[in-house]
View 1 (cartoon, rainbow, N blue to C red):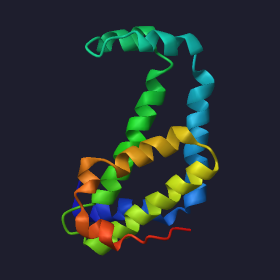
View 2 (tube, rainbow, N blue to C red):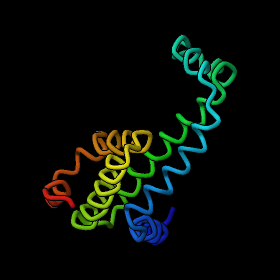
View 3 (tube, helix red, strand yellow):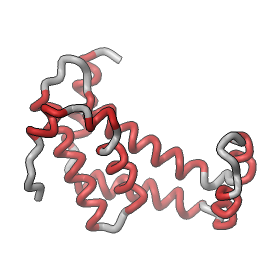
Length: 141
């Protein structure tokens, strides 16, 4: 992806208000959870990590939920990291935006979106951005 494309994508992500983004992510999660077959969760618990093909066969309705969580986490990390030309202050604004989204998820008790966002915030990729974290505001909302 070119640097200008990434800058446009980051701007698009930030222009949506956090509460609107949370509602959109919540609707996506609700659709996935409505399709979930509960006994697939039990089957998933008994699958060994080296049996990836079994997940598709034994827990097909759980797989989209796990993929959604991975996509949310990847989106947070990629928008926060930006491209190489992004300054720490710009990254701090993006991180601050995702913190506000996470807070809205928490208030709405949307743990299926809150947890992936927080996992992304605690990832080694974002924790290594010391200058960025110094610029993130302490008092959010």
